[in-house]
Image (cartoon, rainbow, N blue to C red):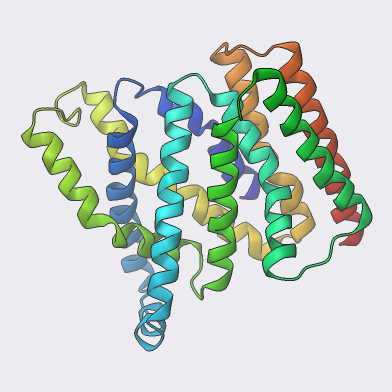
Amino acid sequence: MGITAYLMWGFLAVYWKLIVQVPPMEILAHRIIWSLGFIIIILVLKKNWKWLDILKKQPRFWLLYLLSSLLVSANWFTYIWAVNNAHTVDASLGYFINPLFSVLLGVVFLKEKLAKPEKIAVVLALIGVIFLTVYYRSLPWVAIVLTITFGLYGLIKKQGPLDGIQSLGLETAIIFLPTLFYLIHLENSAQSAFLHSSLLTSTLLITAGIVTATPLLLFGQAARKIPLSTLGFLQYLAPTFQFLIGVFVFKELFEVPKLIGFSIIWSALIIFSLSRFSRH
């Protein structure tokens, strides 16, 4: 289940590429709408509504999940835009760096301690990003936005009482109305691709909810059954496949300087993963 979840996340790039003709904002809107619909079906079948009592008793969590909904929306939009604008490799870099950024957030906000090899890994990753920035004379902003939004998203969700599927349901529900109004605006202004393009395009927009929620369900089950150290290694499957798809399927440019920058960051991840594995 863990492998399947990460492979699905890794191959999402291919899914978004199939609807490259649809603007990223419209894809995002449909992803939110249909994800909520799919999650409601799951919650109804599981009769899982007790978590709503927690929100009634502690309203402060609404603000927490409002922030997480904005972060995950920004993350989803950036990734969809990156794939459909030939930046899949840059997007994979963001998810390679993310575990190290999450560790830094843990140190700053949760007062966690880093082992010496992990400190070296963080410094190495920073050197890799600086190298890419200096060589290309611009920040790898796609990678940085994906790293920051997903890292902060994980930190915020760590403070909340809900599991993955419950929190995603609440996050999509919070921004449901603005998203629905946006889709209505597109329809009224004759800009909507949904039901005005091919049957395949409309179908893929609908099933975006399924491909969003399914790996989350699988991951939630896997997290309960296998050690954290194993999950830590599995998480690199997704950006690895994103990277391979970007280079070998989408034929994105991958020059020697970018290989050097990535290699520095990959070295950091190897050091970090071995350190975490030995600790667990």
